[in-house]
Amino acid sequence: MTETTAVNSPVAPAVNPGKTLGIVGLVLSILQFNVVSLVISIIALVKSKKAGMGNGFAIGGIIISILSIIGGIILIVGVVGAAAALSAQCAEVGPGIWELDNGLTVTCP
Image 1: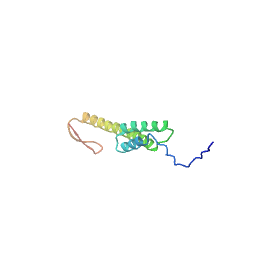
Image 2 (image 1 turned 180 degrees about the horizontal axis):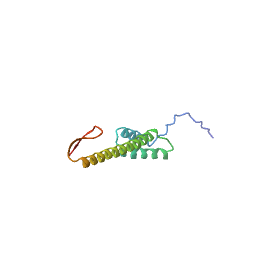
Image 3 (image 1 turned 30 degrees about the vertical axis):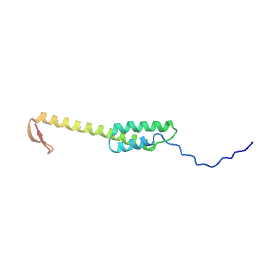
Image 4 (image 1 turned 180 degrees about the vertical axis):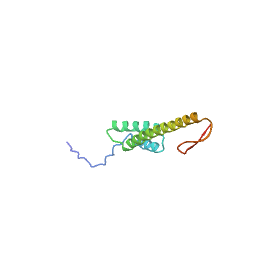
C-alpha cells in the first residue's frame, strides 16, 4: 500500500452568506430607509446565524433602524401635540393675529 501525506494547501475561508445583505442594510439605515433596512438587516443576520457566523453590519443596521424609527415616532408625536396646542389656542381666541400672554404671536385662520 502506498501512503499519502497531507499537503498544506490553502483552505478557502468560509463565506458569510449574510455579509452583503448586512452591508446593504447598514447603508440603507444610514440613508434613513428605516423599515426596508430593518427587514434586510434582520434577514442578513438570520442568514449569518444559520451559517454559524456573526454579522456586525446587520446588527448595526438593526440598531440604527430601530433608533431612527423610535426617533421618528417621537418627532411625529411632538408635531401633532404642538399642532393640537396651536389649534386649541386658535379656538380660544378666534381668527386673526394675536399676541399671547407668553409673548408669542399666533396667526389663526
